[in-house]
Length: 197
Image (cartoon, rainbow, N blue to C red; front, side, top):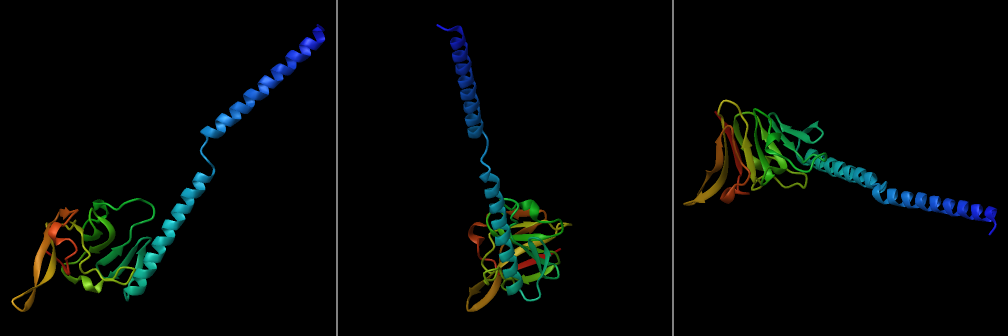
């Protein structure tokens, strides 16, 4: 056997082995590294959520005469009354979204969906406020939180027909700070919200 031929053969085998190890390393790294498409999908999802929120805000402005946008996800409907859509930057709303000094009601249970915030004492007819699809807030409240100061009250009332006459009946509420993530039998029945000391 020619020693030169043997060294060349050994050298070629080492080179082949080294190339094989490099190829295996590249392949393993490719499997372990997250796909480049993943961030694009996340960005795309955020853009879709932002577009959805913009459509909802546009609907609120269209259906609530005199409303003005006061935040990325919030519209002032009248003095002391604001409506908020679910922001695109997080997965869920929370009780902590109700700012100090306000009483808040949510469209769905567990403080989710659209939110109405009330600041001043008074009686508010929910039929005066409209969500982006054009329907009003009557019979749409499923959770509430009273974050007013000084122990003020918030009460949800429903129009009840008794003995041929209509009257407002108390169906949920409480003295601040107080709330409920689910309203039981009062769910989707409120026609009026009242705030008082």
